Length: 351
Ligand SMILES: [Zn+2]
Picture (cartoon, rainbow, N blue to C red):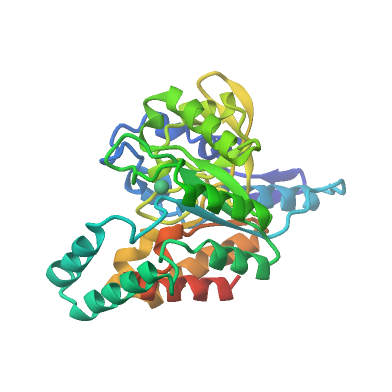
């Protein structure tokens, strides 16, 4: 960058670079997907050039504003404020429902995790849930809503339809527990959104079916959510959401690595590069997904995980952006996730 009497010369095309990041242009050409057809962080320019952990588009915007002010600009500017969006994908609804679950869980505790202590804890929990003296560990709705309320915000719960693939966990929306839970969330004034099932990416008619059914169930329009497994093809999936009257999506994030996939920590209106049209739909890029860090936490590296998460959080705060957290409802209170919960609670303390 050169500053002289004549003006400021920036050796970078701020607008083209921002357009490239926000439209996810590179993903249209990315054929090296993972097992689930998702783009991988390792193949992204942001990761390869070492800036995935920086919201570069927001940095460009700040730079541009500073240059304009230096040149005498004194007009209006948009005021942003840091916000926290607390979101929860509801992938499963009851842990101890089926008859085979106990044997399967305890078998995995002993044989895979080699922990008799964990097996005992799970046996005790299952008995308490069956007796009605303890809540099912997947029933974390009140706890999550309580947390949101202490922060003066609402929780967003995205419900997954039964689905038809082995990656959909198969709870039915006709189950009275689901109906009761949805009603309870509504009564407490929190939000309900759609978590379109695994195959909605290929079979677009499924999206409409699932949206209609959730609207019937909630008796209200459903206009927000996130794709299950974060399966997303840009710009087609954005267009799918737009065509079905959705207001915002929050799927864009690399599941194996946290960072700013879209180069921004702010909600933004989407542009379809295939049709050349601006959409009404907004993207709220996801900042942190719980499961990205599960292996690291399990291996005893909670401190490192927290440091990385808090660094990202501080960057969002620095840019007065939106910190979007995904904590699955079924991950909060499982016995195997005790250490993970400590990380979650520590993160909340830093907000
Ligand atoms: Zn999911």
